[in-house]
Length: 116
Image 1 (cartoon, rainbow, N blue to C red):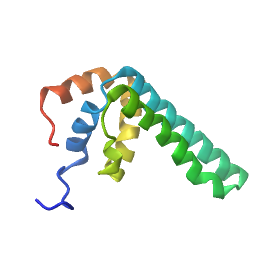
Image 2 (cartoon, rainbow, N blue to C red; image 1 turned 30 degrees about the horizontal axis):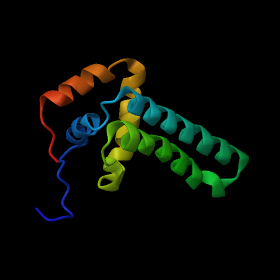
Image 3 (cartoon, one colour; image 1 turned 30 degrees about the vertical axis):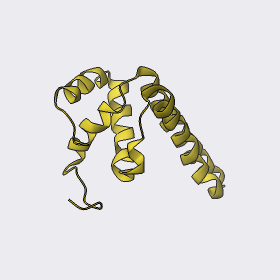
Image 4 (cartoon, rainbow, N blue to C red; image 1 turned 90 degrees about the vertical axis):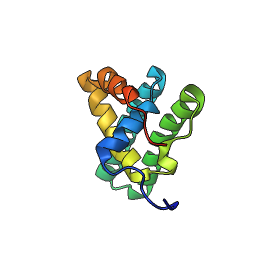
């Protein structure tokens, strides 16, 4: 397998790995908070017409998430290797968080070892 090949065939397969990298409850909350804050800021700046600030929404959102990885999870964010999958999975995890399905989904992901 070359360096540029994707090790995950589907988004769902990657999501299982993604969840194993987000086991700490504080890290999960930081991800949800960062995603929500980033969305609110971007929407607000679009509404105001201050488009130049939009990248700042991503920086703020990811700063919260990366704080969770470096301080609580003590692992490297998957965003560095899988930026698109990670971005989409941030929202999948947020949906599972608010629906109450996150603990069960995490336990399922931990039962089958992820590809690394």
